[in-house]
Image 1 (cartoon, helix red, strand yellow):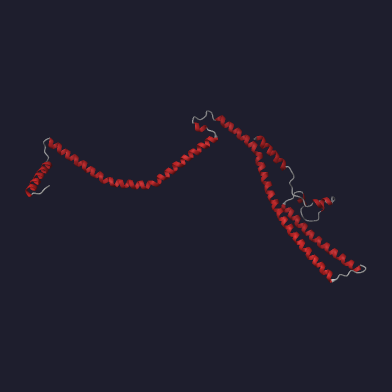
Image 2 (cartoon, rainbow, N blue to C red; image 1 turned 180 degrees about the vertical axis):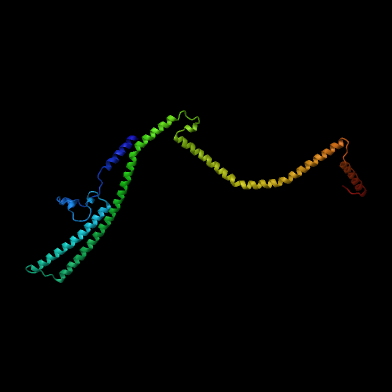
Length: 281
């Protein structure tokens, strides 16, 4: 892996060492006139643009050359027109141009202008395409340069991390007694995923219980409300049973129980009255 990384870095470095400067517009002019130097240039455009071209300098040069070309074309047309006019006057015999010839020339001129306009439009479209492609190539070149810089720093970082890992492994003595603390990274990630799944299941159960908690609380309150009267009755019954048992014990000891005697007397009276009146129980 290290060999492949070094080979890739070497390839990218070799590509970066190549001259990827923008094509200079002045090379054809300089080649045709070796004696001319940028120092003899009469324009006000910076001469450093030939050595270090930038988009701004190239745009300035383009505007400058467009202006010079317009002036040159005007001067050329003026000189050619004067020359033709003078030849027509001093020639033997004089050159006389008929209106029909002028009309034909104007028709030809209109046709040529149409062709020239179409070519200008094609050139403008080509310039726009070249500008877009140039920006895209510049962006890709900057991205590759940044990636190459980052890639060049990887070997030293990998070596540093390897050294740190070795030092940490050396310091980790003795190893932890818990097996899960000594697992490799894949096993640790798998265990972490399992624990996370269990935690999610517990969270969902907790949420379900939290949702059912208000209903359980209301049911508990209802049961408590129903239980309180039963507890009061139970307490009363326990007290009555205790009192009855106490009285019974006192009766067995000979102390008598007025309430029990009175109860028996009332039952006897009731039975006698029912017998006398003929009322069934």
